[in-house]
Every structure is written in structure tokens, then in C-alpha cells.
Length: 76
Image (cartoon, rainbow, N blue to C red; front, side):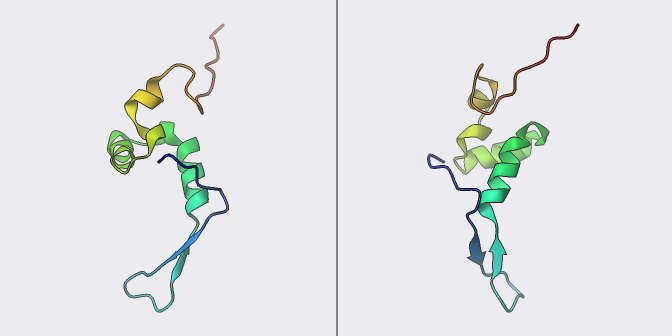
């Protein structure tokens, strides 16, 4: 995924069994998922990587100074 999705972006999708389209807040979902990526399991990260989400790939997650990485506190 080379282009960022704005947090306010949403899409309407058709869901089987629903009479009306459902609004999916894609930007919010991506933002929340990215900020909580350290809580995703290996299968979830692999699925996102397969979809082309670059921040979910192992190389990007492990790179020192990678964007979105939080600084580790030193133990005293």
C-alpha cells in the first residue's frame, strides 16, 4: 500500500442479506490497526502483508527507526 488512506475515508459496501449498503470507515480501521499492530498475531500480520500493507511486513516492523515505532524506555 503505497498511498496513505486519510483517516476520514469511508466506503459503502454491499453485504449479503442487508437491504442497504453498509458504510465502512476504512481510514479509521487502517489508522487503528496500524497503531495497534504490536497486538496483531502472526496470521493477521501475514494477511495484511499479502494484501500489500507495507507496515505489516516483518522487514518494516523490525527496522530500527522505522516510522511508527515507539522509542523503548530504558529500565532503571
